Image (cartoon, rainbow, N blue to C red; front, side):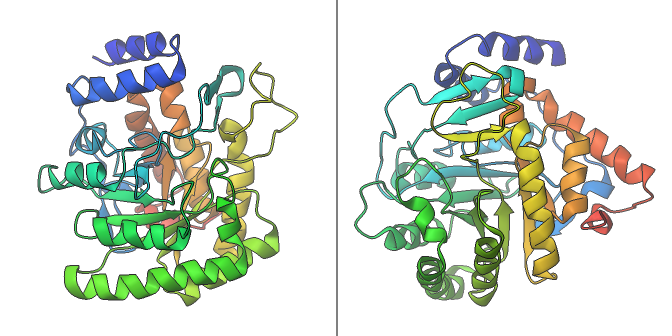
Length: 353
């Protein structure tokens, strides 16, 4: 059946990107995607801040913003799936067009602006998911564009979803909500993570522990990245996702849409995000875990992130170009790389590069 999914992907690439995305979600809701449950090699299993993953290949936030098809996405073979970004109140996001393919660069530029249906719809869908789940499902939470108190928005998201999600990611690094990245500055970060720590303590006492990660930008200075790391450690965060999309426009870009405003993702993000990941792994000294995101489109790239210090990886953009069969191919290639280098378990390769 792989050829059918490859053909469907080719057709979707000819459509407007947002229409293609909507059709992809609908197709998954109808059960049209491939199903690859329970076929992971034991070497790919790993613990991620208390989450048990059958494999370390996850889906990044942005694809399933409203938690519509998380169970179907797990059935594609992902070890974990991150839904969102979700904000307390529904919002339409930025005006269209706001999503642009750069096929010659294997990249995408988006300026979506946290378009989503809000916490209530998100929570309702998570609550209706089959149990037990085939893997962890995380909630990526953010702040409304017009919010008077963005720190409070993150706490609201945690409190509403804590009993329903398996882990949380604080998205402070999207370039498409004006002023959001200012939360990465030291004083603002201390305020945010302090409020999150306080909320987390009370929620954990009632509903149990959940890992909390922070997703950061690849455009940080070295000192800025170190400040975030130390603030995250001081406030008990479990890990960092490295990284979100970039505002940089490499000279290598050749696609017609390369000058569009927004965050660039895909292949051009691989090198800078992996370099930042490597630096943070050295700085972290095992005090928190790292998840590698940005430009993962093959087993070799997933393996490079792991050797740079990632305990797990996430992808999204490559899925739009390669189709759902990509997940299984990455896992197969990753397992082969581990064997070739003599690693029995994936965790033994973390930071080995």
